Length: 163
Image (cartoon, rainbow, N blue to C red; front, side, top):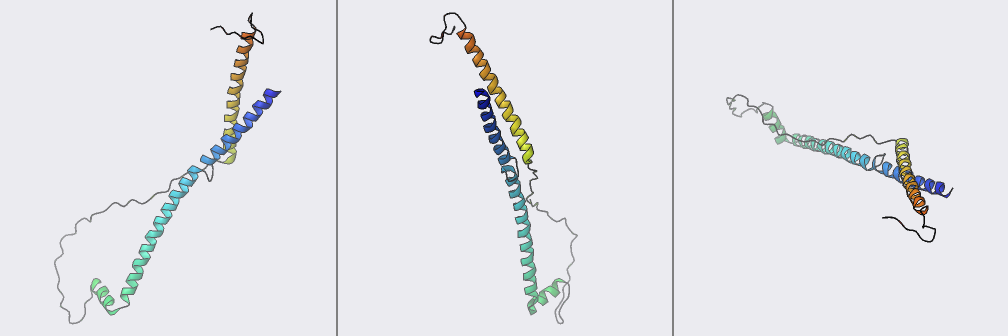
C-alpha cells in the first residue's frame, strides 16, 4: 500500500512537471510561440516603418507643391516649360538595365502551439513510463536483496554479499 502511494505521488509530480514544461515550451504563450510572435512583430514594425517613410515622402511632395518654386520644378519634371525658357533636347542613350539591390524583408516564423490536452497526454505518458521504470528498478533491487538475505549465514543483523 505504501509503495502504491509512493508511486502515485511520483506519477503526479512527474506528470505535473512534464505538463508545465511542455506547455512552457510548446504551448500557447510558450517559448516557441513567443518567438514566432516576436518575428511577426518585426514584420509588422518593418511594414509600419515603410509606410511611415512613404507617408513622409508624400507629405514632403505636397509641401513642395504649395510653393511657386515647387510647382515650377514639378512642371519641368513632367516635361513642361515656362515661356521664355530655352529648351535643350539631348539624345538619350539606349536604356540600360537598372541595377537592382536586393533588400531582405523580415519574414514571420510560422508556429502552431500544442493544445493543452495534447501536452497533458504526452506528460501523462512520459510520467507513466518514468514510474514504470522506477517500479521495475525498485522490484529488481528488492528481489536482489531478498535473494542475498536468503543465503545461509545472512540474517537481518549481518548481511554479506558475495563478490
